[in-house]
Image (cartoon, rainbow, N blue to C red; front, side):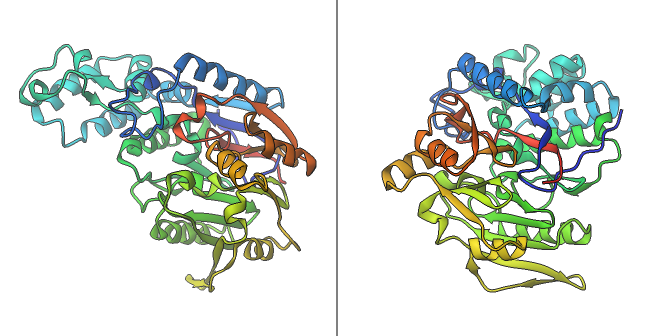
Length: 397
């Protein structure tokens, strides 16, 4: 059964969201590989699952339909073309060599959709491939992976983002995350829920990550460019959304090349049609280039203060800022703990980590209702409620 999905803003009432419940892939993290797999620590997996379950339930309690990525993927793998595409994507790895590739192809081909889903997400360790042999296999360390796990799949915002009734399946910059977009693309191409949904971006294009894309208002996108999204990625998405008639203005927003500010949504998210929660250290220094289209050509303005450029593009007098605390130490701590990374469930209603006490108090003082969730383990991969969610249906703001 097909559904009509559409997202035109950050704050319209949330109706359907795509999540990924963390699982066995997090158990693959060790002090030896967590840096390579982009985690700052080793999460307590059981607690992370409890926290994520509470997050999902909080959304359901506010009438949000929760879709799980692994359930959609398993459904998708019931279809042979999707199954063939998934296996081909895994085998397209130059590290394997011909003999191990052939063995792996036979192994994957014998798996049920449920088991194949598990391997695609949690990876496959050297010792788990009992039929393995040959030079490549013999020279692997016993702790190496034949198929790498995807612990960052938790952050579903990055691999796909909806703009109007189109989906942008993104192009993730870090090698540890490349296969995430392959799984997202598989679902959007083959799952009956998304039949007739047209893509507006694809993984083969320039680096672009969903955490850098904010739908400030219908027809207005802000796209951060920094550690993960390249200027070429911003330009490509701008061209695509202009050509599709989805957007009239794009704001290109340079952000610091830093782990603490890896995406635009680590320093700024929307909590109302005219309010953002924002890291005070950058709120009034952040700039934006306004990009519009004229007869197919991009017109790029000079850099202006982000808040000023955003308000003009949104046709409002002022974009109000709720910051993460005036004390610079508190603000820095809460920014690191994803205090700015809120998920709007509707206007003036947002999900936030409970540990960001100062930020939450300032949100409530500004008239925003805060749905507090635990996140001591979920945050070890550097992501908050917005990072962990991909809205696929919102009401008009």
